[in-house]
Image 1 (cartoon, rainbow, N blue to C red):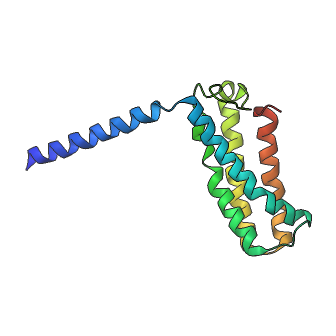
Image 2: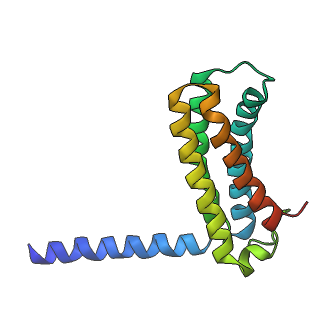
Image 3: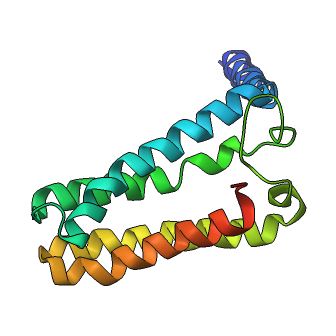
Length: 152
């Protein structure tokens, strides 16, 4: 029985090591494409909400909540795609400052994540007035990061 447990533990350890090794083998071009896809999906969800906030599209509380929720889920995802060496390997607008100023980059990530959670909470109220301020805060979080870490 104890030998069987040792085999199971050994297999689990090998699996964990293989997973760690494969995570380290991610090519820069794949990391760039991954994060760009997530960032594009964020923009895809921001656009209809922006149109509602600006009065260019009728406010729909259900659609707004759905898009705010998806945006919040997406907000935590692109950061793992900023691996070392992914400043090159495919076309990217990521500035080298991302890797030179990781604490500041992390702070801006956390601001976006926090503000999207607040936007979801406001969207649950169900009124346009409730979402305007939090939506503006999300937009500022995006702009702050783009200003410092994205090439024009």
